[in-house]
Length: 370
Image 1: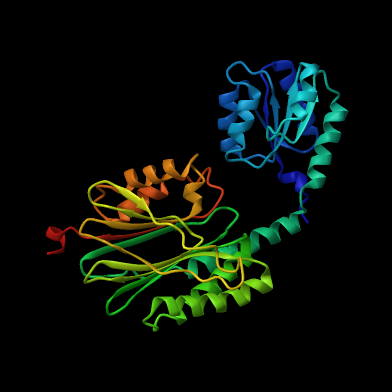
Image 2 (image 1 turned 60 degrees about the vertical axis):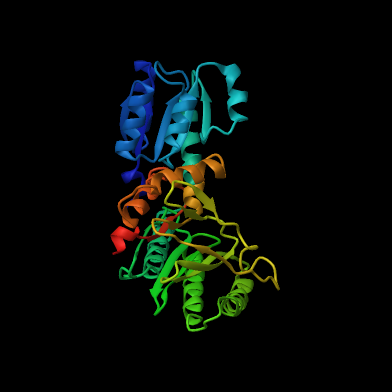
């Protein structure tokens, strides 16, 4: 068995060369492969390059405050961060703040104390076997999620339809599904509560149930039947799912839909205005006996129906900012795929904490559809 010490990496971010040298020696003695930086920005880039297990971070750096560096690191790294400060009076204040650091030491520090603090941090980390098992489960959950997505592009005359999905490193329960009908298409967009394999399996159940109701012509009846079947499974797992289900009549452009707690579907109009479709009730499984009303919108030539996951919403400070950003990303795009890609880019992969999913149904302008 390979010792976890053999593969551990550390980055020292410290502007004082003597202290930096001491830290490097202490960490090398503990079995770390160590690289170093003498300033904050250089340290951030070094952590990004090395992807270490441990970072020691000086509070007082020549270019950036150590707290700001810590914040930047937490956007992409889950390494343990040990923060060092020369001002002892700041230590109590620092430890009372949520700065993202895992430990704090005041200078001058004892090498033995530093070693002890580091050992304590790594004892809290899961074993290599447990960590490997967790990664394996997340990989399987990702495979389940991807298997729920449509395997082929959909072709509806007079419309352009596209979707994109990017799982987070935690893997949630997002998925979208569509299929063509004689009248147009059916679309399901859902997000099961939770992370990992449990959420992925709930999503698989939802997809199967929603597909099974596709032959029922009345949307209200179909959704009522589906929600009851889904709720039975959700109750046993103490979970719920937000769900947007729509049916497009291609000839008229009418989209009939039910929104159960999703609330992130938008009608982007050709003239450059946007209207967020209101949710029709709570998520499926949240409260027994809930019924959701059917609503409708008319897609005119050049209009788009845009449905996104909360992984995009989380990037913005308000729903209004989110809505405006989706409008800008969608309006005047040449295709539904281009619009989907632009919306996906609103939530960069390096910082997104949740799955990001986007579907765009665009009715072609009359000249393009002719």
